View (cartoon, rainbow, N blue to C red):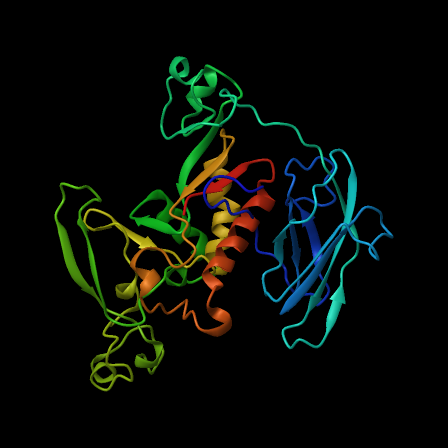
Length: 356
């Protein structure tokens, strides 16, 4: 369901180990009978994909004359319906063919179905739905807004949508989220440092000191870059001998954590870092732990800072995890979509929105 500014859609470590498209979902559910989005999302899992063809038909045997069909060169197994208007309360059928990464083999999925059940979302004003960040006074909110960050507003009008403010592409350290992620990685055998993005070369960064406030001074600092080639013995640090003869003289970080990409402000008391949204451990933590916890008691989650490329200064810098060359050029965006997909599969009834 596409909403608000960037509204990325999309949950859990998918088991993409089959050459045939599996686990097909429309609007994050299997054969849903009450799809509320007139342009639903389609999702599937496949071990290898360079391109796909997805078709929607009005009958199980109607694919010779589909309602809509799209073919794309993309490794991302998510696509939004973009065909003629679908009839409300009608059942449709869909399937997908996926070409392997070598472009030779093609596998076809089983047929899935979905049924539209559209109705207008509640709104107070006749021509627009209104959103206020943190308005929470029920008496004030009941005749002015439709969506806000405070669930107390629902006391004045139950159909007000209350979403929880949260972060997905960045993380404050120290914080409860950072502690929980650390524990999750330890429990499941993931490397915590893999969950962060790192500069690939020394990079100058200017940020506020202490907090992102206009009155706080701005300071330029040199963030050292990390290059695995400099760590010749692979022990996670660059010792004196390795440093003196390093393969990449433009990357001077002695330890990988020193090359984390900061955003918004310099610590202390806290730092804010850009996360590796494609890391399997981080994706699992967000889908299995963080998103369900944040959505509990709310109608959904509003994720701030979800850009189409690496967040903050990372967008225009060399980044270890996102080289952005060739087929890798748009991988950050694809990783964000896949992460949101995993959260939506876990929370199909929750509203998941994002701000770029």
